[in-house]
Image (cartoon, helix red, strand yellow):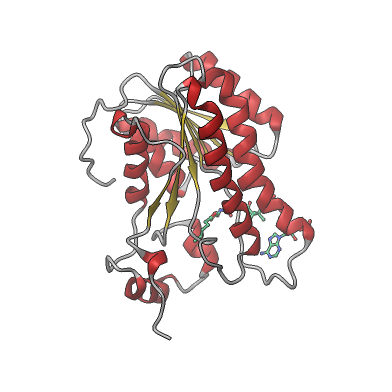
Length: 264
Ligand code: HXC
């Protein structure tokens, strides 16, 4: 785990619910929230992966629980909120990290494939936020963080579905920040760039992670790929009082990668 510049009690006493928290970026975010004082609940579809992640969190001394289910189910989202409140009393921080993706040529992608990614990323982010709203609004300083991407800033090959979904996520971030600000709920996003060791990298460049690392590194102004900890610390910042006047913003954490264009 990356060393944190934040105080260890920066999020002391808070309760965080992280969808898609059992692996990859979601698990790293959960670890950082936990070591800064949160009790954490993670959700995921695969029981064995969920159980392994909870054990990893507990080994770090974090109070953690895992809830199985699919963010595409409104009933599952409602149940996660109710169960988290039953276990830990409330929810202060919601991280919408559950996502689905694959490479697909737009001319061959089925309606079902497009719809699936929209339903996991965009509809799931709304459904989960909506399910948590009544609980979040009871606290004075609640936070929602939506994990996005930079795919849609220009256009990305074979990512018509994920680009549309993440554009919708960014829009949801702004709309909820506007409507829920009066309840003290801050709503922000984090848009990761190329992060090593993630499902995003292995799915989008299968078997080519090593050569992709070289290609990507050459294109990133800061000269390296990101680590999961880079995303996790951005979330700690947004969740903490350091971000107390930030709402409706999607923070790009990509070493400047999306700015890069090859010379024409
Ligand atoms: C084309 C595909 C496909 C593929 C699935 N589909 N995989 N189409 N190419 N490789 C289509 C199916 O044909 C079907 O369409 C529809 O999608 C649903 O497929 P299912 O397999 O039934 O869906 P499901 O089992 O629910 O799985 C969802 C999934 C899967 C998204 C397809 O990959 C998944 O569960 N992923 C979760 C983990 C994940 O992907 N994490 C990575 C996130 S990375 P029809 O027409 O038959 O109904 C990320 C980073 C983004 O988000 C930024 C990157 C830089």
